[in-house]
Image (cartoon, rainbow, N blue to C red; front, side, top):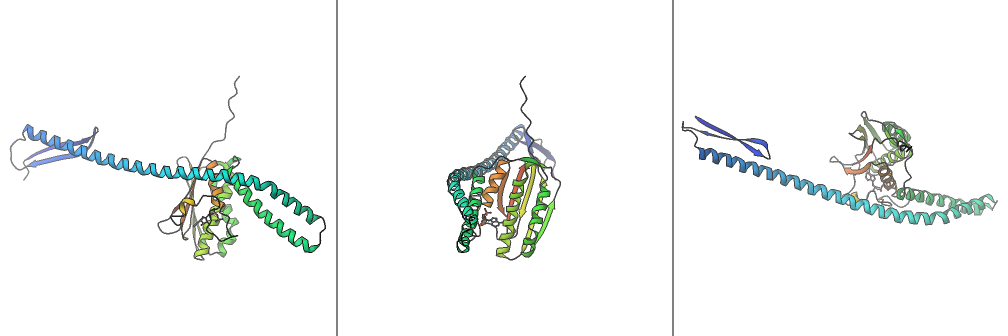
Length: 306
Ligand code: ADP
């Protein structure tokens, strides 16, 4: 049976992490040296525990740094691509407008039907190129958002209603989990476009691989804003494609099917709002796109100096 007992605290930086206890089966008092030894041992344990914690912390910091560096490199590359794209887009824009205007004038001038067919093809093709050029310019130089108060769950509902027919014909079951979230100060048409792109992509990913699927959309408030998740149970994104997803013209769709601009334009728009757009693969399979938007504040006019 234990007859004598001594207990010392294990400390690390003025915090008590635990205790070190020693029992003895005789009546003899603990000698001062023994107590000192125990206290020293407790100090050593405290130091070792603290070192282990510091080590774990610095590893985590290193990992955070690596992730931040990768994000920075990606953002730099995206902005370099953006500059290049904007240059090309502006160069293409002028001749394109001339082609469009000329084919329109010819169509209006009463040319024979044989030639009209060709002109209509030119018209359709130039419209398509004009759409690409517009997206590129938006990606490279997103116009400053025209902000108003937006309730994101309303936009989710609108986009779902707009794609309802496609979702049903593609056998996609839609689940929504809408929690209370504050309205955000954002550009309504850009919010709409981003949600539209994400939901369309999710639908296409599931329809093209499985012919059916479940689309889950969550809206929830965060400490500084709102978070929207668009989740599918399609094929997900392969690890080598994940870093390229938001680069203009990155597409895995066939020629004529995808322009690879939806995500890059969405990325630029959310960035312009001071928010974040990113993608992760779900453990259960499928992809999750996350939009985080800060609540934002109406700009107050600068105070006038009298
Ligand atoms: P596009 O749809 O024209 O290809 P996007 O920029 O919208 O252009 O998307 C780029 C690529 O990202 C797609 O081609 C596809 O490979 C991938 N992608 C986007 N959304 C998903 C998703 N939900 N699941 C899997 N892959 C996706």
